[in-house]
Length: 279
Picture 1: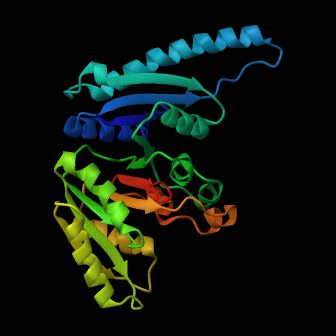
Picture 2 (picture 1 turned 90 degrees about the horizontal axis):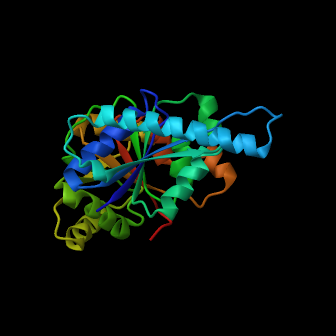
Picture 3 (picture 1 turned 30 degrees about the vertical axis):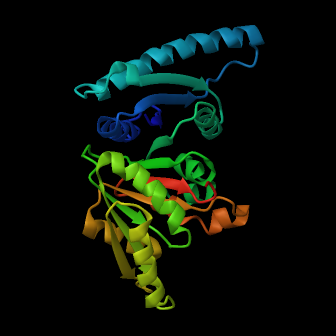
């Protein structure tokens, strides 16, 4: 059984991650843990004992609030109550807490809601981008306006540099859902057609799971993200899968942001991101 960690701040925007996770759980018998991480301000005059007591009180209140929040969203689903847990953590560093909690408790995926961000937030980093760029656990970024629908098709965007390892992970995710897979490669004029044909044949031999191979020539007049969004609009997949490179310098992460993190800002469908550095 897959374990999914879903983050929430109780906002309407954060509901989409839980809705998607519930949909995934209904199709794949997943266990969900809903995590709220927040900071509690306390007067500087308070001693450590008073602060600790206050944090316990506020944690208990938030735990009750979280249970009600989850129950309302989960109403009508067929997920056993035993398969949904809720956890509250206090910290001024939510991303670090989310990553550490996911690793310590051996979660398979982290699910977080996302929405468009302005240029300043792109430079400083959003919660979603930070998780995608730093989490060792695969991250599912869900659009804030996501509407629940069955997961029946997956668009896997690949640069084909490490497709043999990547496709195994994609199939492992798609197979329990009985979802179709389409491998999308946006090619350039510099790539050899014979090489791409050979890769297509190699993909067909990796696993006994049908994969459609979509070679689309890049439009040099638009960004790669625009090309991907055009493909999504045309194919209308249930979700998208990408792999990102995390072991880059600080300069590269700010000014040459990964395609997967960049896409998550304006995601139209849920996006599952695996770390290329993880075998």
